[in-house]
Amino acid sequence: MKNRFITNIAVTLLLICSASVASASVVITQLNSSISMDNGYEIYLATNDNEQGVSFGSGNDWTTTFQDTAYLIAGVDYYLHVRGYDQGVIAGFLGQFSLTGTEHVFSNNSSSLTTNTSDWHGNNTGWGQSYLASLTQLGSNGASPWGSRPNISSAATWIWAGDEHTDSLAYFSTKISAVSAVPVPSAIWLFATSLGLFSLKNRRKRLDN
Image (cartoon, rainbow, N blue to C red; front, side, top):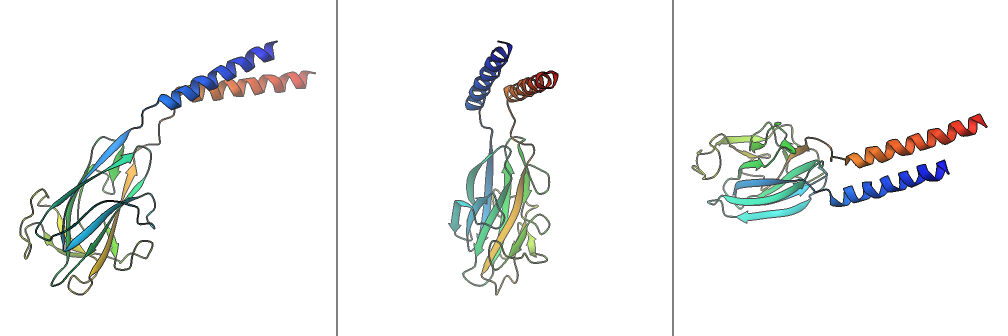
């Protein structure tokens, strides 16, 4: 009788736990990007640095600042991937990025990031390939021949992977880290504790017999 009573409690807690998980709201972080690329780009969000990921924006006009938005799930690490391509004369990548909320941070441990040679990695061969030892720095926002770009911080730096005159393709990556794991409803811990006590009680009963 006692075992049936404890079993009923465990089953009830399991049902409560399942309901809690089903009704728990998913926390979403918004990623905003402003990019100026000479000449064109595609931007992706991946959960593995060796994979391209899912595209959420593109543009091909070196005179324009393009703005794109993506959404991140709390508790998941991401990689921001940008593929740039040049169509003659000189190449360059300039950008500013921001995160809403407190669930994620960029590689600089902040909710905002600009293009620079410290927080970004790059190569000319593609995702999953070795990154170059360093990126090429081409001057801050406002530098010649591009001039000042709107919606991008003056602290942002024009960068490229390899030679900006001869390397027509460049692949850039930076990590976006989850601040904490996905929160677990308290009912799960209550259920786990009850199940543990139930197992311990049965074990002691067998030993006593």
